[in-house]
Structures are given as structure tokens and as C-alpha cells.
Amino acid sequence: MTDSATKLAVDTLRALYRLVRVDVAGCLGCDLLTGRRELPGGVLYETAAWVVNHVVGPMNLGTLIVGPRDHVVAIAELDDIAAAELGPLLRDTARVVETLRQPEQTYVCMWSHGRDARKHLHFAVQPVTAEVRARYGGLRSEQLQARMLADGDEPDITEVEQFCERARELFRVITDSRAENYS
Image (cartoon, rainbow, N blue to C red; front, side, top):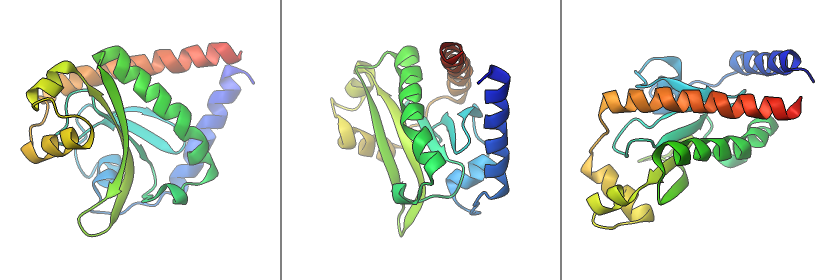
């Protein structure tokens, strides 16, 4: 398949996805994707079923969110397209985070539980550096994330936007490289 045919196929899938998209007002994920709420740094990368953006809220700089375009609340609800795209997209997102933040570890965590019910499914791809661990008393894993959320410290918006520009370009490099390998 040529690059132009591949692009046409992806664009067609995206257009079809948008026609049947499930959107729930008041859902943070849906509100960010539809523009009802501001998304600092904007969309970094998208596939037919998924969108990648910087986290909104109290997580560290470079934490990216991989979320479905549709209001999906469980992995069991993913259609075949979304399921097929998920693994490669999480890998590519982790590569972007690893390259730009050079963490000790990159966490990939699925979250979809709200206060009273399931909420918009999303994966946090979080770079955990020595600096981040030191700032939070050496905590790791879910204890680190819980403390970050409780403390409420959000990254500087200017730093988020700068990070997003670099991440967007790196996603382009990764996808261009993949297209070259298939031609």
C-alpha cells in the first residue's frame, strides 16, 4: 500500500469514527476532545480510535494520556479497530515519553473509575524520574500517583506547551519512520 493510499484509508476511518462518535457532556475526556474545555498543548497524535494529549491535572510534566475518541468506560467495550490500535499506540507513546524525559521508569496505567461510576477510559503514560520520586519522598507506583493527585501540584502551562510541541514532532518522526519501513 502506498503512503497516499495508507493516508486515505486512515483518514476515511477517522471520518467514519467521527460520524458515530459517542460524546458525553460533563465527561472530562469528552469535554477536552470536543473543545468544551481547554486542552493545554492540544492533541499530540491521533489514530482512528484514539487521541494522545498531555495530562490535565496534578501529574508531572510529560505525563501523556491515551484516550479513546468515544466515551468508552471499559476495555471490554473497545471495538476491533480500537483494540488493534491500542498496543502500538501505547508503545509509541511510551517511546515519546522515554525519549523526551529519560525517566527511571515509565508507568502505563489504565484509569476509568470515577467517584460514583465508571468514567472515560484512559491510559496515563507517566515518566517517573529520580527528581519526581525525591519530591514525593521516594514513593513509587500507585502510592506516588495518589500523593501527586492529593497534593494537586500541576506542571507549568508554558512547560506543558513546550513539551507538547516536542512530543508532537517526535510522534511525526515515529510514524514517518514506520511508513518508510512499510514501503
